[in-house]
Amino acid sequence: MTHIQIDASQGSWVARVGEALARRELLWILVRRDLAVRYREALLGVAWAVLVPVATLGVYWFVFDVIFERRRSDVPYVLFLFPAMLVWGYFNSSVGRAAQSLIRDASLLSKVYFPRLLLPVSNVLSPLVDAAIGLVALLVIFALYRHAPGAELVWFPFFLLMAIAAATGVGTLMAAWNSRFKDVQHFLPVMLHLWFFSSPVLYSTTFVSERFRLFYALNPMVTVCEGVRFAVLGSELAVTPAMIAIGVGSTLVLLAAGLASFLRTEQTITDVL
Image (cartoon, rainbow, N blue to C red; front, side):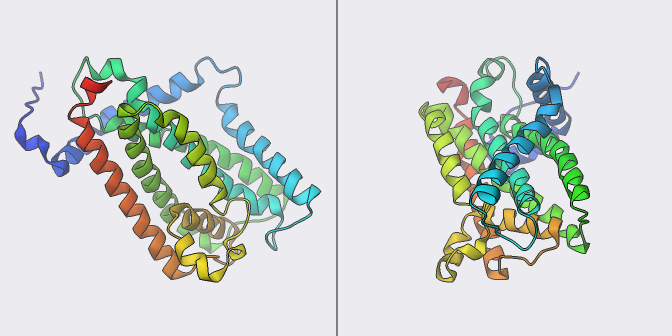
């Protein structure tokens, strides 16, 4: 039998993050549990991971490309839109799920000890499965338009990792706040809705005035959306190296702030839930 001793040394943030990383097996168990619960009683199962982004894509394509007849790129608007929609859908889902993770598993927290950080992190990782399934629809659309990704695809993991880091930062921060302030659940959907329109999903960053672009790049999803679009389509990168540097910096700040806030709250989490 394995014995775990909890002492003052585990109060260190670095030690507690390290402890969470050491429990990788438990992390994957939580990810699998989340996926199983999500699709267990769903009529169409994992098909929703394809139907939702495709249906949303159809609505935006009809409104912006058919009704208003305004194309945002030299490539067909469907190809322009879908890569950014997939990565935004992942970010939106993971942040929302991570924010509710402690509330959903409040009974589990009071019964057994484990690194609490694993709960929001598992909810950040599980939507990656949905995103991967959504890529199947993207490949079908690419085949219909006879478009093949180029060498720029090697940059895709970098921008995806940036999206995961940003989602982890915001998700852990919202999870910590939501455990103490119940009105976060009302504020969060509004924040994500505004964040969506503040990110270049429906439009290109080139539509933003040059004098505001460095400030605009403080939103990490600007670099993520444009980067994924560049990697998948092989189109011209709409963000400059300076904007990418600012986006990466803001992502790291969000990640550090989220982890710090969560680990500070973790000490008394079972007392407030």
